[in-house]
Image (cartoon, rainbow, N blue to C red):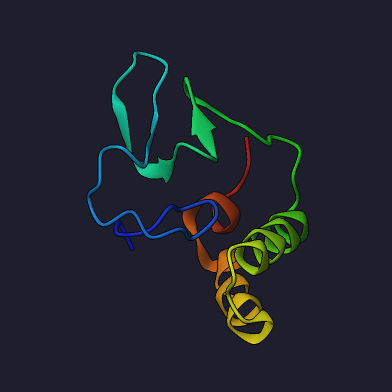
Amino acid sequence: MKNQCQSCGMPMKGDAAIAGTESNGRKSALYCHYCYQDGVFTQPDFSVEQMQQFCISKMKEQGFPALLAWLSARQIPKLKRWSSPRS
C-alpha cells in the first residue's frame, strides 16, 4: 500500500517528486503532493465520496476510460486516510 497515496490512491512508486510534504518540509511516505502539503490535507473537508468523484473526474480528464476510473475509485475507502478514525 505504500506504493500509492493513502488519500487518493495515486501510484507513487517511491517517486519523491510525487510525495507530499510534512510540516517540517520532509517528504511524506503516505500521501502525494496533490493531497498533502506542509503537513495538512489540501482538501481537509472532503468526504470519501467527494474524493472518489474528484478522482474519477481527474482520471477521465486524463483519458482513462470511465469504467477504469470508477473501479480505481472504489478502492479509496480502504486507504489509510479514510479507514482510520479522524481526529
